[in-house]
Length: 583
Image (cartoon, rainbow, N blue to C red; front, side, top):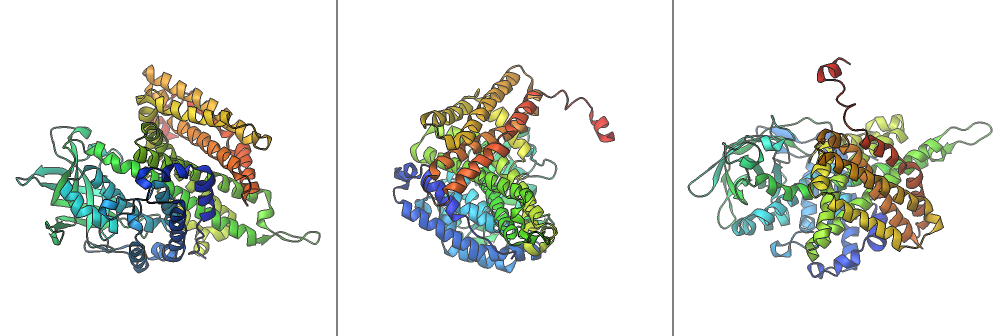
């Protein structure tokens, strides 16, 4: 029971066939080698890999965990076998360039595959995503020689990657990094320092690990200005690509964690390790954002995948678990009870809306990259912190509701839903906590461009609402979108006003509710689009009913969120730190 996973292929294909303008993406020259049939075939095959190869490793990986032994890390045996099968199927290469051995599929395809692998095993998915993120960084900032040597092997999955940013004293404030990089006469650098919370920083699934490391090249400059980005391989590489001696980078321990126990979270020590500069000196933090933007969408899809897995298990249990009954009435499956229905429908509505939001961003990235569309790139940038935060928050909520639906059976390990809750809990934390996503959204995405990106998004939603004739059956969800967008416009104007007046505390006090408000409005818009597209779909009645449920049960939260945004910061700072500690 704990290994069961049913990939939501029908839901994914409905989005890609009827809601997202997939045809526009496939018409771009960059994706001219892909047609709709090939795209759907890849998604179906990925669903089989997720269900039959990856999911069976999930419970074992949680139970056994990664093991640390004198600097080496051993993965659960099933995870290593699953990775070998995943790599043999060519899945690491899916959305990477053909020039380096990739399949150059659109981001929409990668989104679908990522969602299903995440739903099957979040721990396993981490091994896959860090390799893809490392390849993206090298493609953007590596020299031609580095790209030629490293990217094909990352693309094939022969080598893996690790993203190495966090330090013990700094946490999320990575601009405070102390790891130092000293330039050698041959142009390489020696890196010395300690990093923590490094996913798959050491393991035995691949021999080579390509560490992408943030380090300080100018000790005289504080903050981001003195930071640069480096490639530090586990083994040094000769010009012909052969592995040489072990580099001076090692894992000193792995963390005992609440969840994703099969994914080793390492403390890494660099003791004069040889590194290669990526991009210009002093641009490390800016260059790292190549990876951060990729990872934000990936983590959003982690949220969608885990929420979908939790929903699937809760639905199956509620349909078969019989409770109640008396002489006058027969016992019924618990899905007949109003409270259980509310939990299940909330899970379905939130998961569907979150999926739509994430796939819309994948579509925008495809249009931005394939057509050089700057507005699409700007919209994706605005939506990424919203998606990362909302999809992961909803994953935790969905997993918690799945435990509640199972009752006592959910609290024990037999059904696997308590593992989903433990695994999901990291997603609102890593790759920038969700509070940081709110700060980024308000200060950078909204404030830095004076609201232009938001205005472009709002116009797109308004145009969509105005260009389609009203449908009485969809009035509830249509009204919810219009009402929510009005609240979001007013909130955006208020925050811009506060920033313009120098009242940054007021603006930041509203950052998290603003992020939730924006996410709710965009998901309502996605449900309106899905309801319009349902038409003669076999599940059309269900889709329209879920859209109406979202409108009646979830969308009304926009009013409370808007009020919170306008409340300012005075009540948050009415007590000093000492007074709060005494409460």
